[in-house]
Image (cartoon, rainbow, N blue to C red; front, side, top):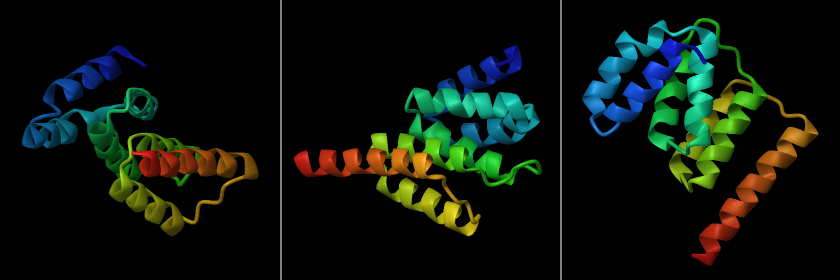
Length: 126
C-alpha cells in the first residue's frame, strides 16, 4: 500500500463516526486512489473487521470503470460480513454476486460455506 493509501485509510477510520464527512471524503479522495491502493485499503479494513468502512469501499470499488466481478472479491467480503454477523449486508453482497454472474470454484465455495456455517452456529449459541 502506498503512502496515499495509508493516509486515506487513517482518515477514513478517523471520520467513520461522521457519515456526511465520510461520504464527502470518499468522493474527494478515495475515488482518486489507484486500483491497487483502493483494493489494499479494502483488504486492510476487512482484516480489521471495519464493517462500515468495508461496505463503503465495496460500493466504491463496484462503481469503478476497471471493476469486473471476481469471486475472491466477493468471498472476502462475505467472509468478513459473516464473521461480524451482518445479515443484511451479507444478503446484499450475495445478491450483487448473483447479478454479476460470479461463479465459484469448489475450494472458494467451500471456504464460503464454512464461514457461513460458523456464523449460523454462533447465532444459535448466543
